[in-house]
Image (cartoon, rainbow, N blue to C red; front, side):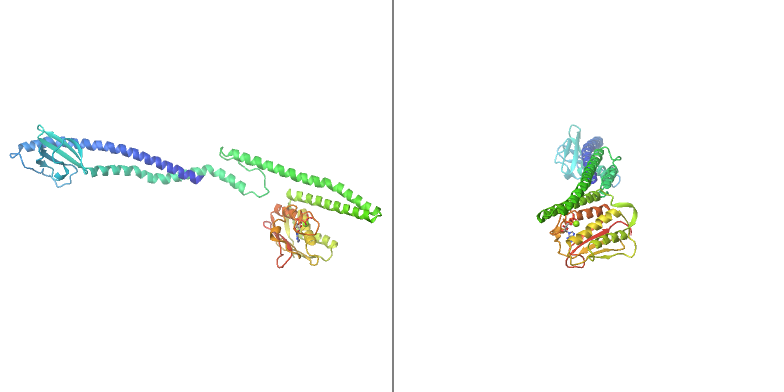
Length: 437
Ligand SMILES: Nc1ncnc2c1ncn2[C@@H]1O[C@H](COP(=O)(O)OP(=O)(O)OP(=O)(O)O)[C@@H](O)[C@H]1O
Ligand SMILES: [Mg+2]
């Protein structure tokens, strides 16, 4: 816009100036011609009486004579004095008879090279003709034109710079507004400052802010609905599960027992699903960072200890020697780690250990053996309810939760298959792009 306005306005101004120059040039030429003509006429009429006296005073009235030049000089105007038959009586010293017609004429006339004025005296027997070279007039016109065009050379850069500067100045707030929208993070839906915008752009700021507000409200509604429903489902599900378990001990028939076991299983996965939905709602609702730093090492040790007690000998843990203090919220970190280790235990090969490691810079890596997940499926795994080919039960929310927490904390979750340094397996790595060690 800035470029278009500057170039357009400069071109416009230059074009108008050129038109102005052309018009005034034409007028000036016309006026100059009039002045030159009148000077020509005046000269002829002034010289004629002198020439006539001169000629009549000559004893021998015929033959030509060159008017003596007082000093050697070039002549702009040259003249011939002739009788009505064209016989030369007198000429100025630079005059070239070839320029004039065969017979003298009165009034103005043009030859290809000269403008001529003729006048007569003594009952049309003596004629004077004064010639002025047209080149002289052309030169004057050209000089006037050039003088009018000169300012344009200065005018073009000045206009260009002036317009550029003014447009830049008036668009500065708009550019700031654009930058403030660009620079905000993915999850930042707070309203944009747009009070200093030019009036023409204010409605845009208002519309953008209204849109952001509606978006924020819609997202909040969705999250709180998910969280509330998951929360509300927990108690009835737990009650139903407990009742099904009690029923299983009460019934005698094997057939009935396995039916009740199926119901128990369905209720358990339902309760797991509602638990994951609650985690997802919390993870997406923000709150993945805390105000103070926490050491992540003991949290990781505790979670791995929990899993160890359930599945002894499956996890090999590598911890850093120093503390890893991070602004990552301890609860959010625990949820993330649980999901990653749970995945490795559930979907990885049972014959190989799950490797969990943390380095001093806060990078967490969970890897396991097992089949390779094809790349086209790997990229989809962080979507909600996305699962690749697996026999294990699950809802497909674990990686979506882990990804939401990582994003909320400004960290990155990398998924790789095969795992680093292996031919097979799967690896999830959490790296911190912004936090201090
Ligand atoms: N460590 C892993 N090894 C092999 N495949 C994995 C691993 N982790 C995840 N996957 C694949 O990614 C899919 C998605 O994982 P995600 O944790 O999102 O869902 P889930 O484990 O199936 O269910 P949920 O975690 O909600 O109970 C899994 O179904 C599995 O196919
Ligand atoms: Mg999972």
